[in-house]
Length: 354
Image (cartoon, rainbow, N blue to C red; front, side, top):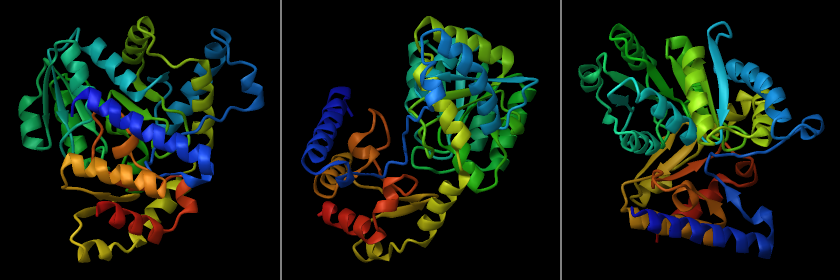
């Protein structure tokens, strides 16, 4: 979809949200994107969100909490924060493109998040993407940088068996492994999968607002030398997180509770979607909700905007960034989901599809 059309879509969604809040208040909006968001900073840290003082304090706290969240080893790993996960990806590819000619990317289901191929294009790096293990292994060599997506934009999770095979093979070819675990770092815990760094990945990035109550920021962790190189490149271009974001990320990491995700997981398992089958609506359950798929992009966007206008339901399809999946994903991992019934959501979707 054209980037200007994407911007028009985003602006339309924002206008609807703005008007609804002005007319009927925040409680008339139900954000079911799964990008929970949050910017909580304790009183003590509020006094420290200064340009240079803040990072001096929060970088250490963030490193400790970040390695804890991603199961890193402080002897060999560091964790740093970027203003977006996409910024961390951009900085990683900018750095690795100096040493490697191509990026070989495994996704459990195509397509990949657009930030990865777009970053490769900027730095002239050859890009190959596949959801076939055999194809991926055939492309990995000493000239390649290997990437694995832990969970797709529609929340399809990589199997640990496949991830380990790719990591082990990449290691044998001296190809560093980068794990794009934006939401997967938490989703995969529901399936008791091993964290990326424990599986042997050199780098992992995760988003602080995906399935957790943090700001829209990217937490990058991994090999100390690689992380230092990537972070130093990011600093040159203002990609790093500033003090207020760092402080909010520390709070989010320290307060993260997997039980919230487990509750959404249980709700998604129990929700009765048989009415969709009766109405010939193509859907698929996800770990924390469901998606409506296999409609034209125009129909999906039209439906998502109706959901927002008439029922106050915010989806990535309506309000998400350019390039994001247009399948309508309903995610119960949000504070707003607690205020809304399954019946309300299902009826809203059915009526909006008409």
